[in-house]
Amino acid sequence: LNVQFEKQNLMEKIDRLSDEFLNSNADFREGTKKAAAADQLAASSGRGVDWGSWGSVGGMDVVMGPSESVLLGSVAAARRLAALEGDDDLPIVAHDNRVLVVVDEKKSKGSDRVMERLKLLMQDAFDSEIIVDTYGPTGNIPIGGNNAQTALIFASSLNDRSSLENLLGRVLKRTAPVAGSAPGMPPSHVVIVSGLGTERTNKMPYSMQNLLGGKLDKLREIEQAIISISRSRIVGKQNPLDYTIVKFGDIASSDDKDASIDIRPGDVLDGEIGPNAAANVLLQALAYQPYARNSTLCSTGSLPEGETVEWNDKFVCLSGPELLRVDVGPGISSDDAILDPKYEQISQYVQEWAATFEGDRKGTGLTTPVLVRKSRKPTSKFDGVV
Image 1 (cartoon, rainbow, N blue to C red):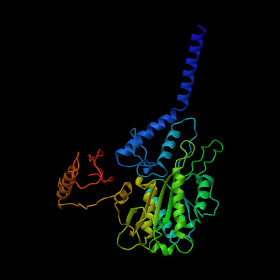
Image 2 (tube, rainbow, N blue to C red):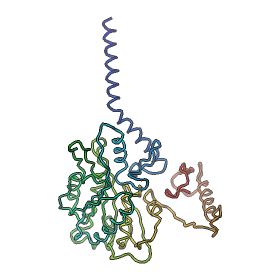
Image 3 (cartoon, rainbow, N blue to C red):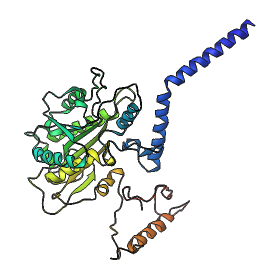
């Protein structure tokens, strides 16, 4: 009887400890389920976990922020804010749209023209007023970034990698609540403005630019630092952090009359960029393009004021390698036409070409076995799915 009694007490203790453990980790396990669901969605669309903006999970949009078309800050931060707003026990303060800018206009030539245009574009982009706090790299930057959602940092204004690490060590700190107010939320998205050629210092003309003082090597170290900081964040202990690295050439005095802006992943372009073109690229990276999250891109060219650009089409190259692009265009002039002959022809060709690789097809000339399946994603101009 004593044995049975002790056994029963032990089982009850185990059940009690199990319940306490499950209750204490309920939020973590729910977050893990959502992350797994998001990861599955990302895999089905051909993107990795590092993409940074996963789309919809459980019927809830995890990309958008304050409005339907704007996403300031990281996706994970938006989720956390939504969770806080659903807790009646936590004080919630008014949510301002704020961007922290760190730049030394003497070191970063042309940055004054870019920032002047960017501020105007941001005021037009947001329904509510957006606050832009500008500091020099040696200025008294507030701890926590003054609750800005995004930090925009010009790498050429910093001395080296340690300068960025010290700067972010201050900006990314979470401030304690004061007098019953909500705790401060540091920036959850950092945009680094760097230069072309940081990954091509062994090629002309960048090898010559890098001879004196290793200018491009220092910029490259800053790029690597933000990637390392973003990926090393501790889930549950540190606020989430997305990064975007935007590489420009020299900033021209003005934009040419013809729109010729180009955007590519990595560091592959050459040439200068107009101030309006640079400002528009930064606006898209800050507030509109999920593909820019946790990505490195370069841009050159010009964009006269008033010109329109298919920005989604420009940034879609960041979602993965673009093997081939064919401009289909309208095959007939009638606006009321139901079918586009050129579109139908290329669509049929792609389907027939893909069918040649289905199953165990030998003699196709491919050195690696492949399996081609129809996309599970619906037709989407944004994602480039036809």
